Image: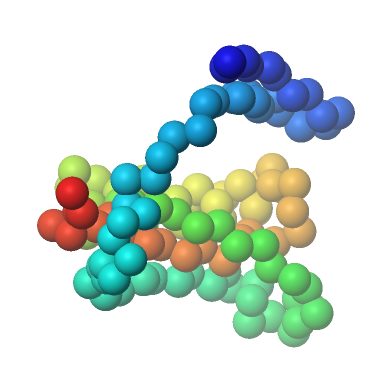
Length: 116
């Protein structure tokens, strides 16, 4: 059967656990399917280049629909999420629980290459 539960770890936000029935993968019979290549944008925070952070391990944030993350011109709505500015301000105000802003990998949506 299905069930849900809230997992609460001390010091973190609760997240929902879902126990869903097994669903067959609709793409399992498409062994030779290849999606067309697409450009992936990577943003490196300024700290990445600073000497004091040279030995720091930077976390990585992967953004699906990444065309909406940074630039208004590439967003399908005409207005981006302004993610980089938000991460930079959060870091400057010491509101991130990590020592540096993350590296951001923006993966654009599969525009026009959806498989049946």
